[in-house]
Image 1 (cartoon, rainbow, N blue to C red):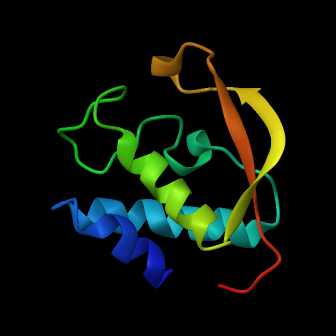
Image 2 (cartoon, one colour):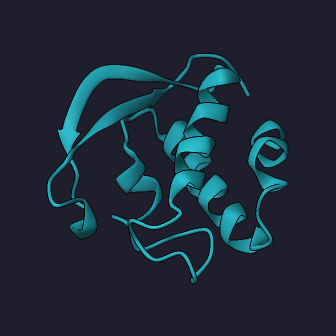
Image 3 (cartoon, helix red, strand yellow):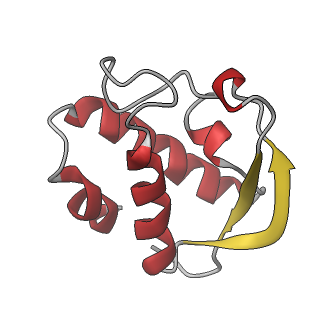
Length: 103
């Protein structure tokens, strides 16, 4: 997923944390099952940096998803589901799926 690393990596110094999130997204794409940002972040417990508490500076996840969608790696299913992340308090989030294209 080199494109994702280039798309979001330059903004963050905590590359090992970012790499972990990218690996989680890669795994979810490969699974063939629908997924959400909660699945990538382990319900909000994983962030790009330990300094970024849930609900603060979590925009990297959006950038990660935007970059993957722009690369045709993922697309929305058209469904929204209730977030399981405690800091989201049951807010609705988009559900995604991997595309049929090889990445």
